[in-house]
Image (cartoon, rainbow, N blue to C red):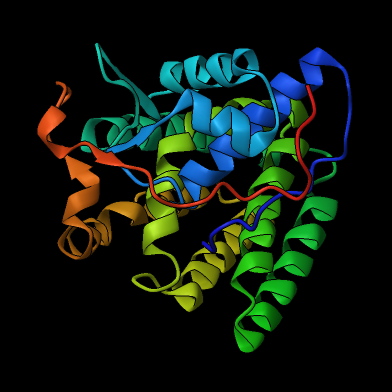
Length: 257
């Protein structure tokens, strides 16, 4: 999975839009590891960098804390949360339960042939993206492959729930993909899933999806070894590991408040 690039946020004066865009920017920074685990975040610094008042920044940090991406330290402030294995395992479990549960409905869909066509088209795109090493577009194609299955299972709106469930899984994959994972193997796993759906083999399709979604654990050790400073085995505060954020927040245009 490629690291996401900065998102362009058009100017708006609506307070709700400012709060949402502030949240989106900070989420992007955390997921891309431009805001790194254990870095201390200054409300004042963020409000100045984004050109907003402290209120939307405070609201965004509260939302991120509720998602487990920010830790609040008494007398210190907001700190980017480390990667916690408990969060990764829960995230993967939820995603697997939801996506495997969609397989039977997708196979039973009267439009299964159309689904298979879309999956095959996406696989052809992924083969091309592998050849040109376009990791960013491959990530989007990867998402679309799974979204097609959800849509033809009769739950197109469920992707928002799956996206929320897999948040910590995605954050981990930003570190592992593609440097410590294989795009070619991911594509072959997609191909196996698509073939089983085309045959109408529910058992094989569900098994292939489980295997695919558990892939994250196969590279876990290598990622921990390479980035030990990003991980924590504890759910408790670790003030000794806090560092001051020295980078810059990336944003296409100032967020006006």
